[in-house]
Image (tube, rainbow, N blue to C red; front, side):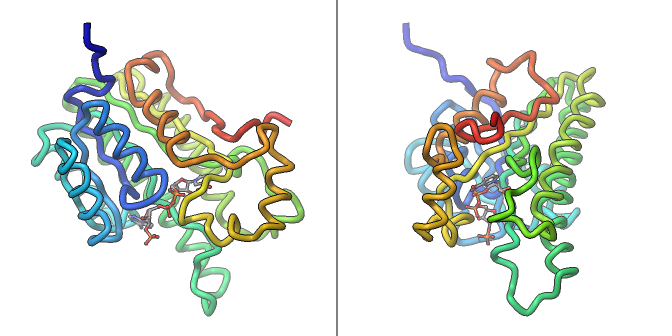
Length: 260
Ligand code: NAP
């Protein structure tokens, strides 16, 4: 008997889908039978990502906009419903790191940007999606991208103590639990992944530094950083019925980093 696909007929909104973990999740979810709404700030790149998906036979649409803008977040969700018929799954991958803030910004501008995109953006998209899911009455699964730094502080050689990134990710971890509690009665599950360092454009400036890479690898029990598809596979598990009794969880995908 042919193996059934794990997301057959489901509609998945994936933000940050033009790159890294979001891109890997879009490919994997499409291969598992999901219809994909790929959203990203980068209009051309997200369109190209969707072209690749549709060329491989998937059903996918591209949407561009900024997750931290309420109107865009609500438009992403409405586009799923209007163009793909429903919304069953959200994977909140859109995110930024302090490392890429413009050099001439002061610390308050950096704080606002990182908290706006990472925390407020995840909130805006999740809120809009959960409202549709609860109203539709078919349940749903929201997967947030937190981080190891949503669970533990940064080591001295890496962190400054003044970086908004861990605060944004800690907020996502807590928001995940709070939404899970509130939405459970409507069978909307909300979970977070807490990846360690993953090879994506987001980390390129640090993973390209040999000394930094060696130090980081020495702190990870599995002795290496992750590939984007290893995080996408964890997202697939949480999005699918394989995780039907899991909600409010913050799951490390970190090679053991936070177990020490
Ligand atoms: P990535 O390769 O940089 O992909 C993130 C995508 O989101 C990019 O295309 C980015 O566009 C887009 N984006 C940024 N701001 C946006 C906004 N306001 N609205 C819509 N899209 C926006 O990053 P990634 O490594 O895949 O990271 C995905 C998520 O996992 C992030 O939340 C990140 O914090 C989290 N995470 C990553 C790692 C890691 O090591 N890579 C570890 C732990 C957690 P631009 O390129 O224009 O910014």
